[in-house]
Image 1 (cartoon, one colour):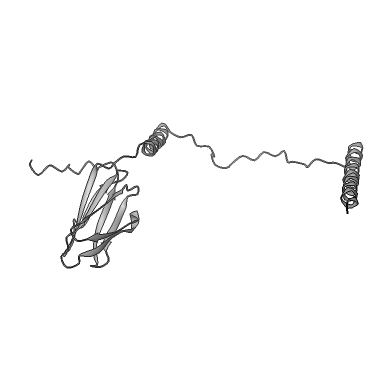
Image 2 (tube, rainbow, N blue to C red):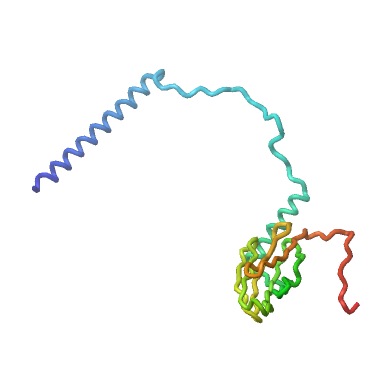
Length: 185
């Protein structure tokens, strides 16, 4: 039994030595016969693109991208607590308000309160923002959203069949609209 590992070790050494000698001999033979090794031929034809491939960004797009990067860094480093607040009431006649307008890119804290006397245990679902909450009578559910894409999104209560809309508008307000005034003015 003790001779087998020594024999096996000697056999493997001899086998690999012979393989190495054979490979070395082939390399020497190939270097003596330079015609045996040929480099792949490449075409020297230069093809020009039909359209301009490299587009130099304008200063405006560079500044816009820089500002977007800075916003993302600030948000990652210091998460902003939303200062904008929205209150949505679930009543017997539907949501109040049934249409909410928000600005793209701003953070909002949404408070949902169920004051429906007939349905005291309902759900509030805002699928587009992955929000689904159980709203018990006279209790408040709070969550944050930050819309990034313009459009009209729905929120609903499946138990009552009531729906509302969340309208996301661009950050730039149109010049034709006047700013809302306080009720006291």
